[in-house]
Structures are given as structure tokens and as C-alpha cells.
View 1 (tube, rainbow, N blue to C red):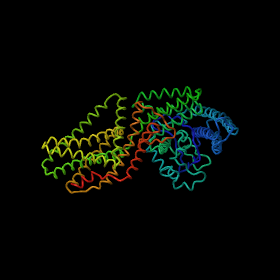
View 2: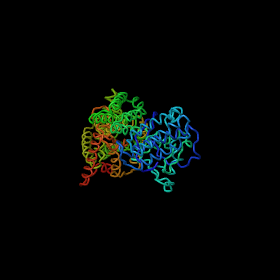
View 3: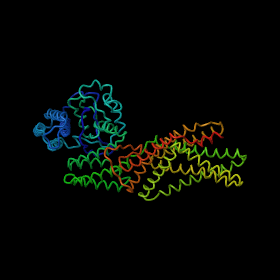
View 4: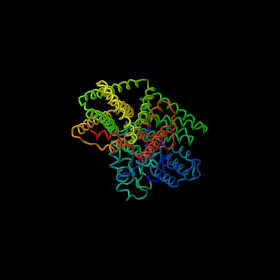
Length: 601
């Protein structure tokens, strides 16, 4: 297969976690031509099916006009290849197959409508399939989901020489290939609409006029499915599930644009690959999707423009919710890093506050009162943990309410994170806060009350603790079942905080405050941006706010970016505020209270 091709609609494949196909230039040629009748039946079925697909890409739906001559030429080559193999078919299939292929060739020469070519081709495929022993014999589907790990091995051995390790068509043999260069397997324009079944066939028969050879007998069927699944997932960050959802969306658009109930059925059959996973997590959503797919199947042919638009909007909105349910979880590494920096940032602020209070007492000539401050700080830590428990109990409600609570929590966390992430604004706020705490300390010290001193320390530390709880609740919500990575980040952050405290108090370490808060502030802004998008997604999952899908908008779950108007508006607002804050930061800066406090120790 070559890089100049566009691809046809996704055909149904009934098994989980696979989709799309491999446009692979395989490194070793087949040792000899297959001679048994079953192998030739498979070759004829594959070549004829691919001919119909390529022809549909090169001719307008009504026929009579060529839009891509190279696709029509390739279709004719596939027909010729099928005709060449007819003499090797089972005897009972030869005469009719020869006649039907001649008819297909005539249709191609006359620029007949692609649908008519597809109908004749489908009848040929059905006839040969029955004659040769049935679909399970002619085109056996895998009995279990293909292994991405095995696919990676096969890809390195068979495909990387031409397509390159990353699939960009830049392998060591790419420049020496005769004819069209190897395809870029990471390019959605090349791979976005390819069918896994199509490539399974293409690997079997090769691609006429290109460097791609036939491998029908050289690779096992299991290996072909595996490498197809692996390559299909390349453009989706290694997620075969994301590839399935992309294929379903394309089929829906094709079914409505071409008014094809057949493609509508294909879309539903592709959706079945992920339906079980969706139903396990949200049965109501799965049922709603089934109903909308039934609507698509029954009305794709006869619906007017308004009804087709409504069908599309409902299906795309439901599919967006479904993909979030089964596929959108951040990596363990990113969760660990976020968790670590979050605790380091918030914990370090708490350490600075406690250290400032202790220093204040020493300068006031009352070092013996430090235990009152320590008592208040530890009580604040305990109160923070209790608050966490109460928050968890609060969200243990019905599923709809849980989504609402989690969405609100994430949006609130995003707002607070954004507020504290910008280091200049944070410094201004801390200056006011520290002045307030110092005033309370002076009053408590004058009164001689230990409880008053403890209360001041409690107030200062609990404020940081409450922020931390809010942020971690949002982070755990985002993590889903990967919470262990967040816990590991907390543990590592705690060890880091102990080390920082000992270095400051025992060895007199001086921390460069501005770089520290600039780096951690950038991390907190990133988390605010992600939480904003995911918070809107949670509220959309609870159907509390609309979900308006924007065609062509990016979908980057790791950044909390979804192709919906509502989430993009909120994140756009955060970007605008960040720009405004940066411009504000160019003005004369207020001196940082935290740096002054640390230097005073």
C-alpha cells in the first residue's frame, strides 16, 4: 500500500479492542505462490473486495466522473489479479467467478456508480465463501483480541525496515523502495478510515504496482491481526479502544452522507467491540447508544436532512461520553509526577508558615512557646485528614450525584489551582495572609494563652491542608482505578518534605524561592487546565450541562482536552486569564513575603 491513498469506510470486525488496519510494507517476499484452492479462494475474495473499495475512492457516488485516477487504476489491477487466480478455485466456483469478475471489470471501465460495483462484488464474495466452506474458513476472524505486544514484535520484524520504528515511513529501506514510498502509519489522513479486514486482505494479496508483497501464507492469521491492531493504535497513543471509537464515528458520517443502511449496520457492529466495556460501567449510556444506533439503521436511507443531523448529534455526544468512560485515564507516570509536585508545593508552603511562626516566637523572646505552635500544627494535620474522610463520605451517593460532586470538586480545584499557580499573585496574597497571621500571633503572645497560639498555628496550617485535600480529591477522581500512582506520589512527596525540612532547619539550607514557586506554579497551572476540562466532562456525564461536539476539534485526554464546545470554552478562559496574569506580571512586582520570611530565620 502506498502513501498516496485515501481509505474506505470501516468494516465490521466482531471482537474486542481492535480496529483500523495496517498499511504495511513487509520486509520479506513470499517464497512461492500459493497453489491450493482454499488459499486462492482467499486471494480472490481479498482482491475483489479491495477492488471495490479502491474504486469507491476514485469515482463520484453517481458514477461517470473520476476524482482520483490512481484509485481506479489500482482497482483494475486488483480485478486482474483476482481473474488470474480464478483457474485455481474449486471447480464449482470457477465459471461463475470468471463471469462475475468480467462483469466487475466492465463496470469499472464504464465508470458505474460505486454502489453497483459493491453489490456485484458482495455477491461474488458470498458465492466463493459458501463454495469454499464458509466465512470462518475463507476469512477466519481471531478467537481472542489480538495482542498488541505480539503486534509490536511482528512490526519490528516485518514492517520497520520500510515504515520505520515509529511508523512514519522512514525506515532504512524506504529510500530504496521502487514506486510509491512507504505510508506514514501515524498520519490520520492515511490511516484514519482504514478497515482492519481490508488490511488483513491486503497483507494476503499485496498491493499491485507497489513494493508491498503478498504474505497470505508467510504470516499466520493471528500475527496479521496482531500487527494490524498495533499499527492501528499508533495514531491514538497506543490505544486500540480509541481507534475503535474513531472508526465508529467515521462510519456514522459515511452512513448518513451516503444514505446507506448497510454502513449503518457496520457502524453498530464495530461499536459492539466496546459495548460490553461501556455497559459494565454505565448500563444506561450503553442502552441509550443502542437505541440511537437502531434509529440510525432504520432511518439512514429515508431521513431528511434535519433528522439525519439530529441522529448524528445524539450519537456523537453519546460516543464522546462513552469514550471517556472506558478509555480516558492518565498514565501512572503523569499521576505520580502530579501527585509528587502537588504535595511538595503545598507541604513546603506549610513548612514555611510554621518556620515563620517559630522564628517570630524566637525573636519575641518566647522560644518556650514553640510547643504551642507545634500542637496547633499537628491538630491542623489531623483535622485535614478528617476533612478528607468527610469529603469522601459526602460523594458516596447515587451515581448521578457522584458525577455531579466530582465535577464540581474538579472545577473548584481548577479555580483554586489557577489562583495559586501564578507566583506573583500568590506572593501578593501570601503577603496579606502573613501580615494577618503575624497580627494574630502578637495578640496571642500578649495574652499569654497557649490555646491562642495553637489556634493561630491551626488556622495557618489547616488552610494549606484544606487546599491540598481539594486538589488531591480532584486528582484521585481523574486517576480512576490508577489511584496507586497518586498514593506513590504522596509517599515520595512526604519523604521529600521531610528531607527539605531537615535541610532547612538542621543545615540552614536557603531555597531559591522565585525559581521554586515558578516551576511548581507552572505544574499547578497545568493541573488546573486539566481539571477544568475533566470537571466539565464529569458534569456532562451526569447530563447537568449540554455536550456539543465540535467536528475536527482535538481530543487529548492527558490535557483534559475534549472536542466539546463547553469544555473548550472553559479552558480557553483559563488560557486568557493566564495571558492576562503574565501581562500583569510585567508590572513592578510586590516583594515576596515568603522569601523574606525564610531569609529572616
